[in-house]
Image (cartoon, rainbow over all chains, first blue to last red; front, top):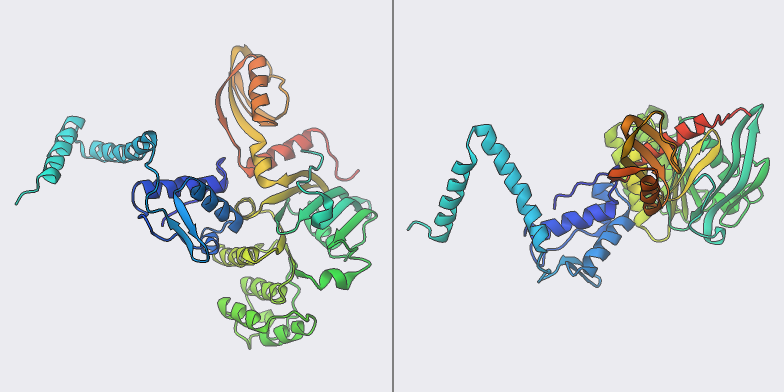
Length: 129
Length: 312
C-alpha cells in the first residue's frame, strides 16, 4: 500500500491518509477484505503520530470503507460504498491527463488517441479467438 | 495566539510551567514562560538555537530553579522532589552526556541500578535493533550511535515521560529516521507522554499533536498543532482599486505584493478573515492553510517589527 504524506501541506495528515486510502479502495488497488497495516506499523513506516493513523482509520470506518475486527485488525469492507460519481471522474481524469501528456510527447494527436481507445475497447469486449 | 491557550486544564497536565522567568547575568533567558503538556501528548518545543529550549528543559528537570513562576511535573516541584520526577522521566540531553570510558554493556548495567522498573529484555532488544556492539566504548561511537545509546538509557525503564532535547541534532537522515521511529514506537505504548525540542519543523509537524514556539525566551505560540495550523490562512487578494501603500488589514502577520494583488499570512477564524478581506474591498482569489514553517517565520518577523528585544 503506497502512501505519501506531506507534513507541510495545508491538508491535515489524517485527511491525506483518508483520501489516499479511499482512492486505493475505489481503484481496487486495495481489494475488498484486504488487511490494512496495524496502526503502529503504519505510523512507524510513515513517521507520523499513531493517533493520526487511528483517527484516519476511524473516519474510514465511519464511512464504511473499512471494518475493524476486534483484536484482529482493520480490513477493507467487503462491500465498500460505491464511489461518488465525481470522485470516479477525478480518478479517471488523472489517468487521462497522464495519457494525454505521453501522447503529446510522442507526437500522437487526440484523434489518433480516441481511435486507439475504441480499438482496445473493442478488443476487450470481443477478444480475438 | 501570543497569549497561551492551553487545550487542557493544568490539572491533568504532566508538565505544567507557569510564568517562569530566568536571567543569566544581564540576559533574559526565559520570559514569563507558560505551557502545559497533557498526559499522552507528543509535545514539540520549536525554536531556533539559543531561543531558550534547553534552559526550559533544565527547569522542567529541576536542574535550574525559576526566579519567578512555578514548574510542576507529575504535580511535583522537580527542584524539591528530584527523585519523584526524575525516577519517572527518561531524559536525553542534547550533548548526550554519556560516560565515554564505559562500554555499552557497562553503561546499561550501570543505569539499571538506578531504576527499579528497568526492563533488561527491552534494553537488550533495543541494543540489537540499534546494532550497538556491547563491548564498544561510548567515546568511540559515532554521533548517531551515541544518540541511540542515550535513547536506550532513556527508554529502557519505560518512563511515563520521555524528555528529549534536540534528539535529531547533528544526525544524518538515516539515523534521524531511526530515532524518530523509536520515539513513535514509544508513543504507541499506552499513556506515555513525549516532550521533545527541535528546530526541524518537518519532524515536529509529522509527529507532534501539541506544540509551543519559543523565541528569545518567550512563548509566541502554544496549543494543538491542528488548531494552530487551521487558525492561519495564506490569502491571495485582488483589490478593486490598486493600493498605493500596503493595505492595512486586521489579523495580518505578513504581506507582500503591489497594486491590486497582495498575498498575506493571516491569523484568525477563516470565515472572519474572508469577511474582513471583502470589507476592505478585496476578492479572495485563493485561500490556503500555511505550513508551520511559514507561521513560524511570519511570527518571527512580527516580533522583530514590534522591536521585541531579548536583552531587555
